[in-house]
Length: 225
Image (cartoon, rainbow, N blue to C red; front, side, top):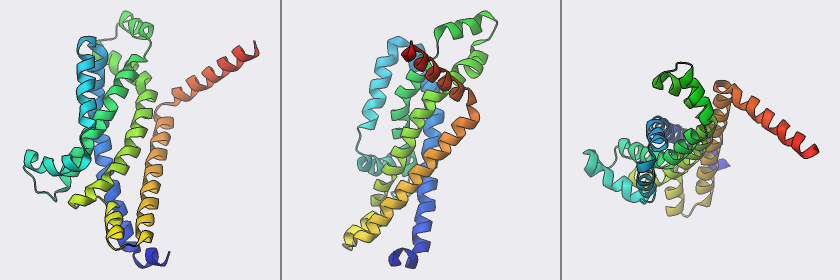
């Protein structure tokens, strides 16, 4: 613990960098996956091809992607944009299938009823489909959040990994305490991100709790019968 107090400014600075570099890809990935997931849901003929292509993107080794992107983007190897873009690609690759499943989960009779009462395609999406797909989208976003916070540490190998610096430096110095502190702070950030998403879900989608409560009540009633 003494090392932590002696280097608190370093750890806090790396934590803030980790938060910043993690949050941006999560937001970008979420925004991008909405239209992509809807297209996969809407057009069944191209769904398998689309999901397969994004699945392949996630299999690209992170370090290889970090190193390759500068030549593609025209940036320098130490530019943090490389890490942000790479993690955004992984976020989209993870979330597209989840987004497609989220829109698949919206009951067809609900969308047909919305169309019957005069909703346009755009208004039906924003007022019916997107809100009802919200709980599944949130569940996938929580997975992406934890994955992104973890993957960012690899970026330390190219100079932009936030708390990953502690892993590399601790390993090179044969100093496990530094590595453990990096792990603990990374876990804390992942947990904080997850709880923030849970809180936002409760605020923005109060109907999901009502539906969950009704579902539990129905299961209890069925069990007692």
